[in-house]
Image (cartoon, rainbow, N blue to C red):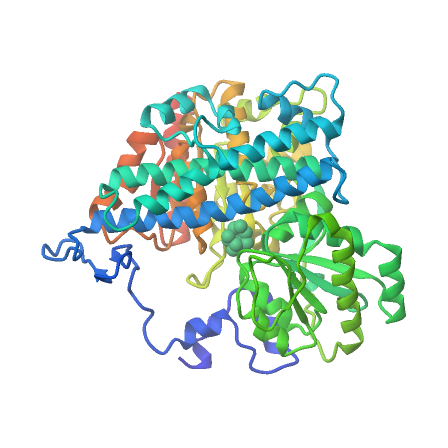
Length: 626
Ligand code: NFS
C-alpha cells in the first residue's frame, strides 16, 4: 500500500507522526497498510492446525472431505486452538502473579525495599482465605498469606482460595461441571497436553478445560496479583492525573515504563524521588524525572500513585517518535519489537529488565526485587545521561484530565458513603432504574479497527444510564477523550448523572490494569451478596466487552467472565468462527451452561445493541423492568 492508505488511530498519534523530528517513522499502522499481500488467512477462523508434522492442515467447515490428516474436524481444531489461546493469555497473568507473590514475600521478610502498605486489606485478604489473623505482626501475617497463595501455583489437588469468594451457586455450578481449578500451573500444563496431537478430541471437553484454566486466571492468578499488589503498594483511591503523549515534559528526564508488572514501576517511582537522582538531574539541567506509563504498567502506577500515562498499546511507538523520551523501560507483555527500531532513530535508550523478555538492540538490566531500588537508580542514571543528547523533538500539547483509582473498595465507599460503605446504594439505584446496569469495556486497542470503538460505545452506554467500568488500554483510550473526568457527567443520562453527581464520580470508572479485571469479579460478587439482584452473577444486569481485543490475555479474561456468568461481546473477529459447531457452542450453548456466553460484533452500534439488550433482558428476568 502507499502512504495515503495508512490509517493512524488517535489524533495525537497523527499529530506526532506528522511533526516528528525524524521522517519516515514506521509504526504498526504503516505495517498494516504496507502488507504487500492480503493478510494470511491461515488460522483466521481457528480451523487451521499445525499441532503435528503431518500437516499443517487447513479445514474449511462444511466441506465434508476437509478434515485433518488425523481425522480431526473443524470443531476439534477450533476448540484446541481456542484452548491454547486461553492458555497463552492465562499463563501471562499467572506468571505476572507469581512475580507479585515473590516480591510480596521478599517484602514481608524485609528482603525488598517495598512495604506492606495496606495492613487493613492484608487482614481482610488473610481472613478471606481462612488464615487466623489474631496477634500476628503485619510481616508474619504477610508471609503466611504469601506462602499460602504461592503454594496454589504448584498445587495438584483441591481448590484455589479466592475461588471460594464467588457466589455459592456459582461454585456449585463449577463443581458440577467439573471445572473448578485445582492449581494454577496444572491447568496450563493440562491444556497443552490435551491439545497435543491425538489427545482430547471433543470440542466441548476441550472448552471445559479452557474454562477451568480461565477461572484459574480470574479467580486465581489475576486476583492474587491485584490483591497482593494492593496490600504492598496501596489500595487505589480516587486520584487525579493525566493521560496521552502530551504528559511528556520539556524540562525533565522523560522515562516511560512499559509492560505490566507493578514491581519495576513502583521501584522506579521510588528512585525518581531519591535525592541522589535529583542531584544527577540537576547536573544535566533537568528539573527531575518524569515517569510516565505505557500500557498496563501505566494503569498500575496511575491507579495507585497518580503517575501519568503517556500512551496505550497503539501509542507505544509514537511515544518514542516524539524524540523526547530518554529511556523506555520495559518488562513483559504487549511490547512491540519495533519500539527498538524507533528508539534507535533517537537518543532514546530501550531497556529490557525481565530475563523472560529480551529484545535485540535493547540494553538489558536484569531486575531483581531484592535490589529493586539500586537497579531502579541505575536505570534512571542511564536515562539522565541521555538527557543532554535530546535533539529536535516534538511533544504535542495533548493530554487529558482523568480521575482513576476505582478499586472495588473505592466503589463501596464512594457510592455507599464513608460510614456505611456498601454496595446497597448501587443495587438500590439499579433496582429503581436510575442506573440501568453495569457494563465493563476492557482490553486492548488494535490496528484492526480504524475507529475509536471504545469511546463511541462508552458514550452511548452512559447516555443510556449504564454505569461503565473500564480497565486496560480501553481505559486509556477512553481517558484520552475526557470521559474519565467528572466534567463528562453532562454526557450521561439523567439517572446516572443524578447518582454520580452527588458523589463526584466520573461517568466511567477506571478500575485498573487488565489483571485488575478481577476487581470486577469481586464487585459483581458484592452486588450479588448485597441482595435484590438475584442469587448469582448471571442474574445481574451486567455485561462486558472487548471491542478492540488483540492479545491472548483478553480471550482468557473473556472466558473467565463468561464462565462466571457474564455475557461478553468481542470483535471485530473471534478465533473460532471457522467452525459452526464451536461458534454455536460459544455464542449460544454457553448461555445455557454458564448463564452468560460470548457474542460477536463489528460496529460500535452492534456492541451497544447487544450490551443494552443483555442488560434489559436481565432487568426483565429480575422483575425490575420499569
Ligand atoms: Ni491488557 Fe494490558 Fe493493553 Fe491489551 Fe496489552 S497492555 S494486559 S493486553 S494491549 S489491554
